[in-house]
Image (cartoon, rainbow, N blue to C red; front, side, top):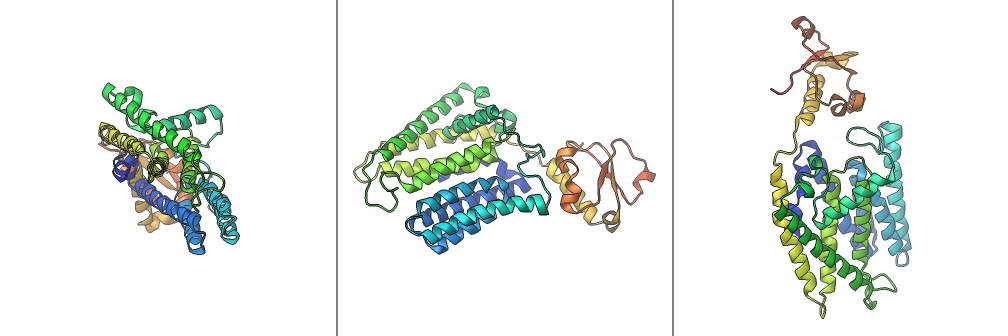
Length: 363
């Protein structure tokens, strides 16, 4: 499972500069959050609950997409309510307060948009495209690489025949194991185990992983263009769900076929993931991040520019300037003077102005 998690195509977004650091840190915090959440469900204690609260605060601060995990905190609080009501109340309160605090800070203090895409485009709530994105996300979990190739590296419909065959086999194996876990867990006799939900054979850890998987896939689908970095934590959760389910079904006296299904799914995934990743090895360009960083450094290192009422940027036209500079909000967000873009050639006399910068495009 660890090998599959590292080979997966979803990690392509991790190679980006600033975005990669943010995504990697957020995913790491998510796995620690998941571990702490399982600990508090096993044994409701203040230390574990405090770890859950702290990790949730850090995750939401790094990436607002993880704000949906407040639902997981509420689910865990509900599960442990009968065993430790104070810890349950603390868990539910911190989950809700953290989510609300993040929204209020962004709206009232930072005055930055909430629920906006990478292009600062507002997220609409139309149903049909969200359903399509969700179904594509489910297929991606099973191993069928669905999505626009400019965002998914290599769409299933455009891939060679052998890759499509492997993808279908992988999906069949994963689906068989998933169904076996759902049916096998639900039909078990409820044992005297603190990990089981009272009155059923359901394992709390598997139910939690299932809740997290649905939450993450739904949140990744409320968008206008689904990207792999939003599916990565969901895929890790799906791998853990399959592995945990196979272990439960293969408990002493149980069947061994779940391990065969899991092994087949993972082995089919290795050549698929490697091929998809190699299809576009240089898929991501750093020009956007570099352009923004260079501008920020040039302005902050110049006292004259920092004191200017307006900074004019001439020279070549900056590609996707609205996106790179947050549709005019770049200056206010980073504490810089207002920017004005003026394409075309600039004369030496104009460039001599202390409030003028020149952008030279690549090549």
